[in-house]
Structure formats: structure tokens, C-alpha cells
Amino acid sequence: MDLELMIGSFPKLLSAAVITLKLLSVSLIIGLFIGFLFAILRLNKNIFVNRFAYGYSYVFRGTPLLVQIFIIYFGLGQIEYLRSTFFWVILKEPYWCAIIAFALNTGAYTSEILRSAFQTIKPGIIEAGQSLGISSKIIFYKIQIPIAIRQSLPAYGNEIILMMKGTSLASTVTLMDLTGVAKYIISTTFKPIEVFIVAGGIYLFMTFIIHNVIKFLEKKYSFN
Amino acid sequence: MELLAFGDTGWGDELFYATLMTIAVSITAMIIGFSFAAIFTPLKLSKNRLLNFIANSYTTVIRGVPELLVIYLFFFGGTGAVMYVASIFGYNEYIEINAFITGAFAIGIISGAYSTEVFRGAVQSIDKGQFEAAKVLGLSKFAQFFKIILPQVLRLAIPNLSNVWQITLKDTSLISVTGLVEIMRQSYIAAGSTRDPLFFYSFAAVLYLLLTYLSMKLINRLEIKYSRGY
Image (tube, rainbow over all chains, first blue to last red; front, side, top):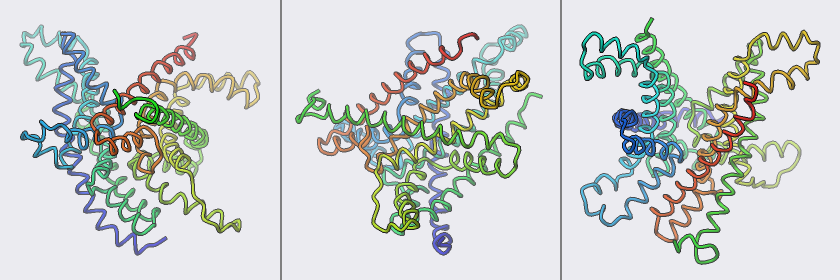
């Protein structure tokens, strides 16, 4: 065990963890919007809208995140037309490519989580709202959405943790996130175990925090 | 379409073999994962605190750390570890470990952590009466487990194991960083030499979709088979 290396690499890895957290939080926020949008589209009765939303979540859940990042980072740059538009400002940056891929990916999973949460709301609750003469818009915003959010908390907590692990793939498109820096240190020092312990420890700590925050929220907003 | 031709002019046959490689790695990793689950599930269910702690650390660490980091650990650390063990037995030559074995082992350990959780959940949700009834019938421990408990565990575990399979299949794409020529690596090579990454990565996505779709169909059949009588 090379303790000196472990202590020496800790600050480097810690500052790389900040990039991991940045990637995670930005993609989660965008992903949440996408997830909400597509969950609502999934509940739409129009078969085309419905199928489109299902297709989106099927494709993004059925392919590896690595393929998605590569298509966006290496693939889209190939389209001449895109290079001449405003989008190129975003698409030439690996940082934004990674975030677009992460957001689309977590959006697909989030839409499934929210859809099943919407579908498990008991019809009686909505009927109760209707019989009180509340407009369907208010029923949706004030009754269905809060219940769906509470229902999907545990599953969404898992999704956050999965996404945090997913951000490690940013290192494949040259970003120096926690995994990227860990790989760099491993390949220069050839001490994989020491670096794994430190980097893995930081990841575990973040998992632990996320897990407990979600648990706290679940308790706070429980129905009982 | 020319790009996908079989033979020397296209990448069709290369990608076909790469797909077979992805399937081979996924199945090997799944089997390694099952062996890990077979060891750690009993430890998780045991009443001994130390054994519990060992099994819990395994599943928590593996499920809390990115797959890519685990793969790097095995990729860079695997050779060293094997050579260290070999040196104990007096063998000091350089040993090169096959990328297939390293990759399958790394993914297998990850898959095993998820499988362990699935099996633990399945065993715990079996009615206590089943264990007692098996005992009362005077069956040997062996028969109790293989004839009464295991078939029921399988029925409960299959739907969740199909999720583990999907995760494992998608995780194998990460082995491409170690140079094993599976779908991702082959697409990377093809994209590099033809300068057409959009086409090849999209095609890789289609191949993965096809694999997940077909395996879902197969697993659904298994599910029906194992839930006969319910």
C-alpha cells in the first residue's frame, strides 16, 4: 500500500469530483424536464404521440450510454449542416455533448418512473377532486403531480445514483471527471488499487449522501 | 449499405463477429456473476454478523462505484495481481492476461452484486412455511434446497434477473476501453478508418437494441415456463 500516493492524489480526485457533481446536477435538471414532458406524452391518448414517447424511452433505455455519448460527440459533428448553425457552439464542446447524452438518457428513465407513478394514482383520488368541483387543470397540478412525485421518490433516488455512476463515461470524451483523473493517475503510477480505494471512496461517499437525502425526503413527504 | 458488406470491402462480417463477442462476454459475465451470487447470497442471509458485513460491503461497494472505475481496476491491476500470485508459486515471467477474461471478470463482479441482491430478495419473499414444510417432510438439506426452495426462488427472481441481464449486456460496451473487439470497439475502429462515426455508432445502437429486444423475448418465455402452476 502506497499511503503517500493515496494522500497525495486525494485533493486532485476531490476537485475532479466537483466536475462529476456539476455534470450530474446539470444533466439531472435537464433530464427532469425531459422526463416530465415524455411522461405526460406517454399518458396522452393519441396513439402517435404515445408511440413516439415510448420509442424514445425504449431506444435510450435499450442502448448503452457509451453509444449515446459517442453518437452525439463523434457522430453529430459529421453533419456539415450542423457545423454551420448555432448548435455547433454547443456540440463542439465535449462538456455539453456529455451533458446532452446524460440528460437524454436520464430523461428516458425518469419518464418511465413518472409514468408508472401517474398510473398508480388511485382513480378515486381524481374522482374525489372532480366531485368537489375542482377543474381538471388544478386536479392535475395540485393533486396528481404532487402524488406522482412522492410515489416516484424511491425509484428516482436509484436513478440519481445510477446517473452519478454514468457520469464516469464523460472521461471517454476527454473530460477529466473523477474517473478520468483516477484513470490518469493509475496509468502514470501503475498503482490501481490505491487509486481505486480513494476514488471509489469518494463515489461511495456521494452515493451515501444521495441515498440519505432521498430517504429523508421520503420520510418528510410520506402519506402517513 | 456498402459499408456493411461482408468480406474485405465492408465491415459487415467484422461487426457480426463483434456482436458474437458481445454476446459471449455478456453470457460469461452473467455466469461469473451467478457464481458470485451463489457465494454471497447465503452470506447475506446468514445470521453471522461478520459474514453479513462481508457480503454487504461487496454489494454496496460495487453498486456504488462506476462500472468504468471497476474495469480500470481490473485492466491495470489484473496483470499485477495474477503475477503476484504466480510469484508466490515461483513463477516470475511476465503474464499477459487475455482482454476477454479481464473484461468478463470485471463485468461479472458487477453483475454478481446485482444478482446477489435479486436472489436475496427472492429467498426472503418465500413463505416461511415452505422451509418448515420441507424440514417436516424429512428431506435432506440438499433436497430441501434444490427441490423445494430453488425452483420457487427462480420463479421470483427471473423478472429481476432479466433486468440484471440488460444491465450486464449494456455494461459490456465499457470493456471496449480495454481493447477487446466487441460491438463498441469494432464500431470505433470502423468509424476511425472510414471517417463515418455517425453511421457506425448508430449501427452499434441498432445492434444493441436488437440484442436487448431478442433477449427480452427469450426471457419472457422462460418466465412463462417457470411460473407454470401459478
